[in-house]
Amino acid sequence: MPHTEHLSKQYDIDLDTLRSRVLQMGGLVETQILQAIEAFATGEAGLADGVIRNEARVNALEVGLDDVCGHIIARRQPAAGDLRMILAISKTTTDLERVGDEAEKIARMAKQIRERGPVPPPRLADVKHMADTALAMLRRALDAFARLDVAAAAAVIRDDRLIDSEFRSVMRQLITYMMEDPRTISTALDILWIAKALERIGDHSKNMAEYVIYIVKGTDVRHTTIEQVEREALRSPGGER
Amino acid sequence: MAREADRERAVEQGAEPRKAEIRGLNFYYGEVRALKDLNMVVHDKHVTALIGPSGCGKTTFLRCFNRMHDLYPGNRYQGEIRLYPDDVNLLGQEVDPIEVRMRIGMVFQKPNPFPKSLYENVAYGLRVRGERSRHAIDDKVEQALREAALWDEVKDRLAEPAFNLSGGQQQRLCIARALATDPEMLLFDEPTSALDPIATASIEELMRELKHKVTIVIVTHNMQQAARVSDYTAYMYLGEIIEFGLTDDVFFRPKHARTEDYITGRVS
Image 1: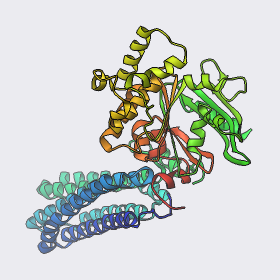
Image 2: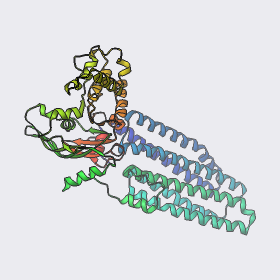
Image 3: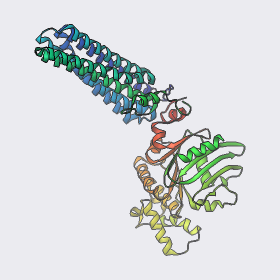
Image 4: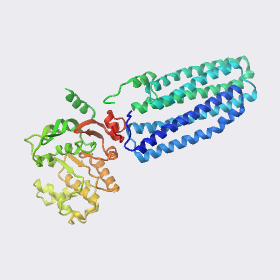
């Protein structure tokens, strides 16, 4: 990616501001997940309510960012790397908004679970571990976007397998738990929804990492294998880049 | 060897037949080397755009195709521009530049109709070529004006002076004049830079129609125009072709940092 400035300083300012706002949205969404998981772990209803209320802020950021993208396209007719950046930002904000939705779901499930009683520690530990993995993926995807680091993005894409595997493990354990004691089915199903939400957060982080490769390399690696992704990430560019 | 590889790569880039092939083209204004070892393909019945900053050699390159530089002393060509299907080197000493300009027409930045009637502007090239039949000239004039999307606007006033037309109409008249001799290629040198946006859009639409009949090479400073109208784009800088390829690729995923810097408006 070029490190030189545009002839128009305002264009540089507009793009830098846009990138910063995406990272701000990422930060807000991270906080939403952390607080939703904390609400699940502690049973604190106030935390869950806070996450549910803040969802409107996440949605507003998505709308605002898409609006800015549209204006830049109209005014600047971006080409090449600039165009790919703007398209990728529009998609990234959609994925971040969906992550926000998942955080809200976790908060609602947390409230529902706590109304029935405390969650056994082993189940808490399973979900906490998955949450740590999902959060790490999200942070690393946002970091890869900030630094336009394709190697880091490829690593996030590879790690999606990990969180998928964790989800399957949690699901097996919950099934066993439900079979042992049918009175726990309602809570177990709610915990399963939380685990599913965390698995979806992993998927969205993977999407965001794919967009980083698209921005830098100009190649759309969605719906390809991890081996093809890593080959593309390592591919040296032609010409003078 | 490296230049041969460039040429082969250029040919491989399109599956479409070639109309022209530029091989090792150098051009000198006296002792000044303005074009440096150009290698490129012009695909038949497609639009190829030449873009680049002022002074990069776009117009110099364009004017090689129809031997315009012959009109001024001290200019010198080196290399070849081969025209297909007859595989003739346009720059060869044995090739008549007048004959070249019959086969390769040119439209300039500022509309330049002759101080004659609309009819005579379009008929002029036919008369120079020796056409005497009034009937044949009438048919050709109508055909050319239709192809230039001007016939319906002027059919009832062909005897009027060409200068009575608006700027956009004059430019279309110049296109009709070029089309009258059934050229194989049309060269457009910033054809819309003197026109308003509506006239510009009509010329661009005309180019889209014309390319099904005639190969087009266009020089333009307007990158969005190049992106809109062309199938292939060559980015030039300081007399060299830095990058050539499908317009979609050059504008979305350029291979060279210099190309990216130019089309995104960056200083380097």
